[in-house]
Length: 388
Image (cartoon, rainbow, N blue to C red):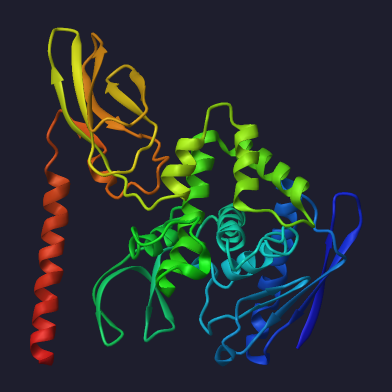
């Protein structure tokens, strides 16, 4: 089945949107076309206008195995039978595949050697598009492989959820890529030659999920406006050309005042693990406090250290290189807590729970969580025992 739509650019010219959809997915026509319009608008606003007069979306059968491929002015998608708006599917797939019109389509990198330059950038921009136009995405898991259920699944048995929670939990940006990254944190790096990755998982993580996360980290570090500025420059300089990773790094160097060599080495050129911890907050005099911060793993990140009081927040910067460092703060106010990387700029930090330290103990939240965990573990053991 075929339907079409029109996107009008800011200069008044138009892009004709063709959508070819399986008969049983006729209900997705509007969502497909609306998602393409959102992509066209986002890229025109932030990178550059789509340079062609047509874009074609082809919805393929689930059994085809090609439900997510990109070609110049054409891409394929697929949808589940049950796909409510709040799951973000198939909109994310549309956003990712459309983003390839720019990354690999217009900026034609060599996918064999540097797949991250198209897959990673497409993942990053798909995430930005989703959270601009579809901000109410909820976490969900699937029952019997295809029925979405809102909440979190912790354990299942033969596709039957055993330990889970039912709740409408909003999905933070880049969370899906974090799940992928946690499956392969140390094998291979982003800039490794793509076809030389030792496993398919290493290839997928270092080409899709980890670059998405690292681009978000770069955005949080330099600011959204600066990120879009350098992205636009990268696009305008290399569209209809063949950029490399080094070309992108050079654009970053040009647009960021500080030397970013450390960032490229830590996040793109190596496979390091990051974990910063506030170990203690000690009162050493009537108005002076010492905050002990540790770097527990090999990854280095330049981060902020905050001391919270009942009337103000005191701030210091740390290059993050030492294994530990004591920060001294002076205040006459009542100190509440201390925190490292308070804005969670480093998405690769593997344990945000130890980033803060409070002076007043708060045990009730932990007790509440522990009681719930014990309850579900007990139920799971009872169910598995009866199955056996």
